[in-house]
Amino acid sequence: MEAAQKDPSRFAELYEGNFERVYAYVAHRVGNRDEAQDLTAEVFHQALANLGKFQWRGLPFAAWLIRIASNAIVDRWKRTARERGNPATKELAASDISPEEIEYCAKLFRLVATLPADQRRVIEMRFAQQRSIREIAKDLGRTGGAIKQLQFRGLESLRSQLDVSPRKGTASKSANKMGRLNG
Image 1 (cartoon, rainbow, N blue to C red):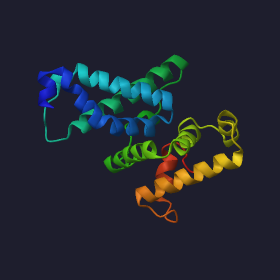
Image 2: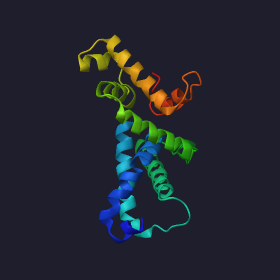
Image 3: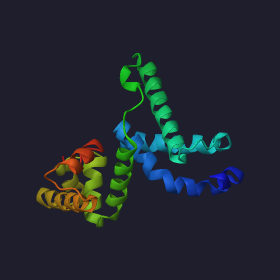
Image 4: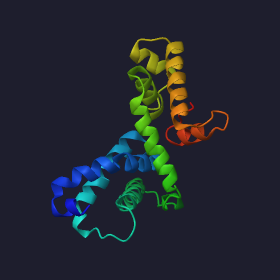
């Protein structure tokens, strides 16, 4: 952290170490991949611009980034509400997402990236892009059954890596929050 404050070119290390955590938080809150990517970029841009103002107060650097993300999300929602002529609602208040949920979501994003290419592509198309089995099958030139099988294998792999029993539903519940992974 101090190195990046003295030399902003070292910010890349902070970015790499915190990207997944921030993206998971933002994606969980906004539920839209494009908006999550835009907001995550905005968070790191603001963090870099204000790096000199960061003061160590016993909390991890990631907590500062999550606060920036929370403020960016609320600002975006308020701006959108104003543009549409809708007053801001209570939904725009700070989220009650826990640090454990943020870490879980970040871990899930890392694990999806380790899936075999076909499974990863189906999981991303199905849950991040929220596309139907039929749309994915058409785009990939496969049958609906083949897509369902790839989805099933990908989800089973994620469940096993997350060390959660499918019967408990914990992985499914959290994955559902991250884009309806059970769909």
